[in-house]
Length: 248
Length: 261
Ligand SMILES: Nc1ncnc2c1ncn2[C@@H]1O[C@H](COP(=O)(O)OP(=O)(O)O)[C@@H](O)[C@H]1O
Ligand SMILES: [Mg+2]
Image (cartoon, chains in turn purple, cyan):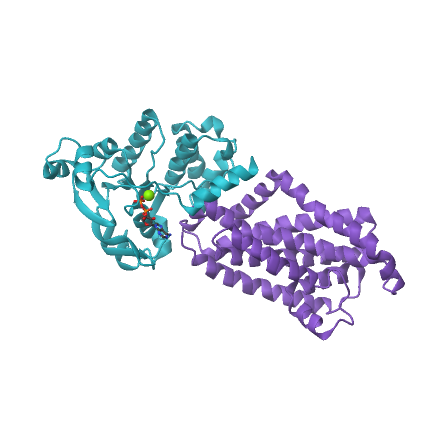
């Protein structure tokens, strides 16, 4: 426990010590909320969708969590390059514990980031339907955060340097985000797009967040919860296996 | 304590370590010497579970680092050749993290950290971020950190590189003291031959992945009919200058610095 705690604490400290990172990662969600929210708002309303900001905010919150989580996971590449990883690799500690500690740390950071984006959404005009659901919202934020931190860590375990990182941005993060229902409703989509969206883990996170914040989950909250929960466990196990194979 | 038989490590078809054999008994101070690129760091990485050997047998405190990793990891401490501190943490936090990872109980941990930090004269910098430290300060901290859990075996890969003679002596006397009082086995590499001659009880010289000679400092000098280990070393490995390594990690660090400042 103490080992998981100290590895968690390390990530938290690193996060609060890099204020520029916190500020920098807030610009994008704010921009999207303003540009898309107000830009597409009138069309969305005309098409009978209601208030677009209400629909969009849970998607942008998911995005904030997604990006922070994957970046935290990928920080392992920095640790590799700057040498600190060696210190953890030679420690007499199970790789699963290291994985869990890192994931909880990165996950916590991602949740914090998600809460900040939620706050920004409130300022921009978003209003949750039912504040009693907020604890459930937090559960889904945590699931998105943990799953994607673990995924980032697992991927980063097999990457050598930051070039692979750029590729991940382009070929993983962007498609995950755009094909998740974060920006548009999943109802009535072409079959192909729908098929992709329903194998995209982020879709279930976005759906869960939206379901708890404004109601009307597409897959259902229980499905969202089970899919994300199960995937998180699987990725943690695969991740610690890949982690144990790292050679320096 | 350390037993290596016919150890070989290949990267692709390049042989970095070529059928080396040696052994180090408990409480011995062993110097592993050789020019740049000889295969010292690669050997240390295999002994400390970071790399898998291509072939050969290795035993560390009775366990195989390729199989019984955790048992091996519990038995040693290491100061790596390359930096391995977390720059975003303070001196104290780096030490504390290490102590917790190695399961040192809190009261002992606190006491040892204080003692070690005072010893390497970083106690009054204990709450400063490591990223603001000079190379020498980081090195001192790494040596101190490697000793927090009082390991049975201490691996030191060029531990004193870039330190002034005062600090080098200071650190070695501490290590020698642990070596006598706790029978700690020490395996180290260095380019300072007078250091190896003074500290080591046994020496192996490796070049191009092969061990060319081993014995006590006196035996090596006798064999080469020289008066100092430095002369013996040059007589054995020749006088051509070996290229300095620039590895991917160094390049990365350089790029990072340029990028951020
Ligand atoms: N991961 C690696 N891939 C390919 N070659 C490597 C790798 N690590 C080390 N080498 C090569 O193996 C040789 C021995 O390196 P090393 O053990 O670091 O030497 P030393 O520590 O004695 O200076 C060098 O030629 C080095 O370039
Ligand atoms: Mg070396």
